[in-house]
Length: 179
Image (cartoon, rainbow, N blue to C red; front, side, top):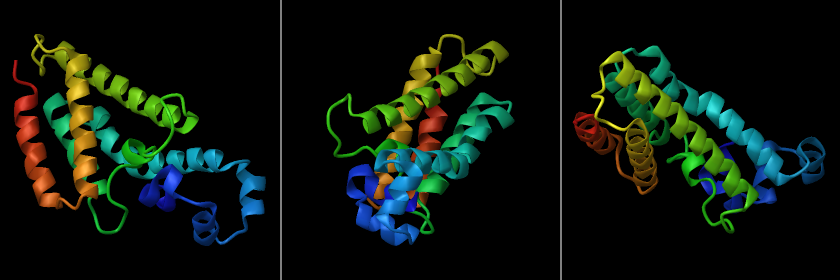
């Protein structure tokens, strides 16, 4: 997972995987069938270990504004700490791949679409519960959050510090739900 997170799908060679996993490439192919299957497993691990805590905020916190802000801040914590690679594997893992129909690119795009839909449902719940103004379009709100989140991931890779990312997120969240 860490190798794919650091280098993306294309940038992670079998040599890197062999070194990181401590097993030979025949064993990797015997276990996973292909580099792509191994990548999919790594992304599943990334979601379980790194993404889920951020997205749990959407379910755990009643107030939509606070839930979204917490989700963003937890994401910042994940992809801007020194203990792990910077950025987001799901946002940046498909860099330098082929066209739109590339299977790895499509896999990550579908995951991002699932996150968008999940966030849109949470925004709709906020409208229904009355803590998001009904004049807001939940799909547009989710697009804004996803786009901002992806931008934060890129900024983290570029070395922007956690404090600066948090200040930007604070500013964004203050204005997100204005009618």
